[in-house]
Length: 411
Image: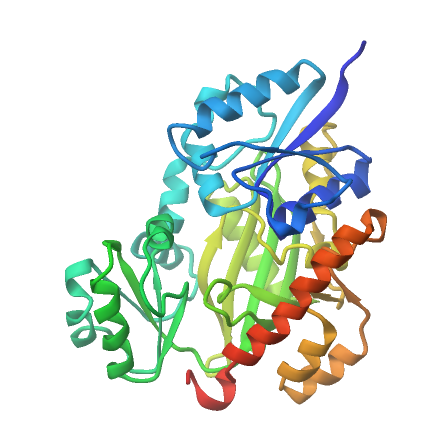
């Protein structure tokens, strides 16, 4: 029996993994394989893919052997294998152990040195300086500098605080009262109260302190791109988040996005990505600073994120670009999105209540809303029930945790 063209192997089982699988199904009618530590709610009761749960799959001493075994098994039936990581730690594991996979993975990844640059703020912002990219004023605190850093930070309160990306896994494994992925502090006293709790935990990683750039959720921007195996950018799509999550487990993620276009920004970031030799998917977070009219870069994630289905809503299927490039050798001119469309991961009732900007509220009302998990081609009662339960929970979470950043700075 002849082999099939290719198989997508997706690492993870969250909304990002589901959206990635959905894109492959829509473009090629293939049935991807999901490998994960646990089957999370977004990918349960789906008919789109096969899912294999591997105990401790996220651990360094388990991941290489488990993935290699899966690759060897699948290579018997498929000409080529694409592997798509759907989280930072899977991306890091894949890049660190890439040489162990015997050439069985068809798509390329960025070298570990580049990932380490993105994960380390001082190195990342040095890279931004070298390429003329703007970023927020920043101070970095080692564990023994968490209090003293306030004396040398080149900005004043309000501030934003988060663990450095390179320490994210360590941070998530620690637990203390009030723990969040991202913190907003109005005063020195609020910051020191959190630090006291953190210091009593096991977290020994760096902290990033940044100036709070004025503006609410609507001032944020996210740009997703795909660069081919030779480092040429093939697609770029800008999004304007209109609402973020606020509960401690999800804060920092986008709940709803309007796709946009900005050719000057596209051109600037395309030059940057091509100059550093970037390959694959990029997810670039930034904020528009109305004081200067500049975009301030926060970070580059070397993979697509939970909200990346907004690019498909705008008309671009990133997985089709990947497979056309790597599997079929098809490359066209770079696509620069200019469409304005609405993607959301929460019900419209939440947008109607918590998007406070009058101009954005009017714009939202003009657009049909697309949602990653509400897929007509994958409808069944179990999935519908799961999604309804998640939606119901979101109303409670927003009611409990939401605050208006624009009205109160960071309260």
